[in-house]
Image (tube, rainbow, N blue to C red):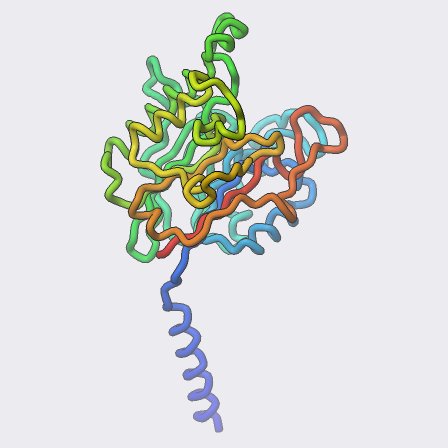
Length: 318
């Protein structure tokens, strides 16, 4: 009897391990600007956030604004690492939704990007500027995800948000001249020069660039009605003309407007190269369930629940 029981257990375990070794057909990436380190749910131990991520079941996550900044239910700034749960404990938070690999991809100030994954991740470069005439204010990152031997080159970013140029002496004049748009474009050029244009200018490998671009695209202008020479289009004009990237949401939803923020703007983007575009099965902006955005009822300026941005999910072949 003991021998038979042993054999039954051995067969069961063999089947279990065989099942675990099967390679997945699809990989799912979830990107989201979670506004101030998911401030909306930090007082709830991030339980709602974790359940949402588990329900989406992503293999890779990219989080923008991935740092705790304000005390719960207030606009009072935290006093540094002794109060901040994130980004210092992303490994603990990620384990709760099944991710064992975590890296701080882009970090220059208090608005970093973090990547969590079921697959091994390594940082190739954190991109903050050249220390001279170029500054990437929130930082950007270039990481590689090893998906069972196939490399995904993943660029994360969160560009400068204001209408005037960074450190402009006369902010009003700078805004009138499109200073913020021009500065964001200089950030984007530098990020691309340090990543895809440096390593794969023709886009022959699998690349993805995701983040909060803080800029609108000319492709959406039929819905926006802006002047053709508006400086607001400069950043995406550059990406579309000078890099091999393709706008995933625009590709899947031609002739439709897919806002990515509570304010109704589309400023969050997923760009990919053609080899990866051919493998994408679906892409969607998530605007329902936990991701439904609403103004914080306490009237705190610029705070939304759970975020002022919507998540974007993309699935592609492994």
